[in-house]
Image 1 (cartoon, rainbow, N blue to C red):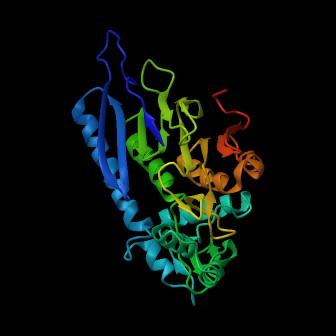
Image 2: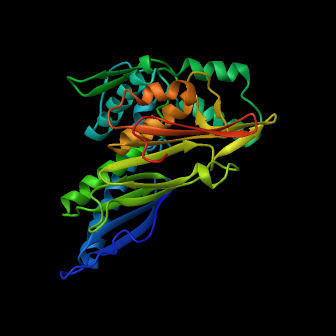
Length: 328
């Protein structure tokens, strides 16, 4: 969980001081806050309104809860008899998802929908999935089952009962698009906080960057948190801080390991800094699945990215950072 700390635009010169304007709305099932630095409130509110319109537009494309969304309608075609042409936004998300899947050895998988559906049922019931249901869901999942045809910008889903789940990438993509819309409105300095998926453009005037607080690992003390100072970057944390379940004495995250179909064991969290929020969102999910053993090698494959892994082991809190991480 991240949050922008106050004071980002407290700049004073002989010119008109910039004004910090922010608005919060619920979109894509979570709370979004968009903050801009402008010279007058009307300009800021108009830019923010355009930005939220973009989030609403993308939700109609990328939602896996809305059966009428473009993504849901694509999932309903599985197994595809003919390729389905998709919009530019859905194409961009699926192409980036495929690349990240390859570079994380399948730890990130946008086809994980059947497994996340099954795991949500386990979180509600407090019981692990039945082996037969788990096997059936796993049979419908796999990065090799989604075929992307660049020439026609079309998609084929080759297995029955497939269900795409953009939960680890769609929010980040939307945050990046919001920054692009704000830039088109003449906003140079902005922050987008989609309930912890945070993307920022230029630093507020007179500052070195946006100050963003990273929440500590639950029960592990404040030292596992910290504050980041970022500009032209994004940061996302993936873990079990806010969505977890204990089954048979073991704590599990809502994040599903596509290789096993089970939630990632916790307490554990990974915070990823990346040049864009699409990458930060998906890579944090993958790194959480891979853990501190294999996760750092995956992070190293992505230029400009760094991560901090925090977890509980043998009643002790442990932490590991990759090269480039800004906090000791």
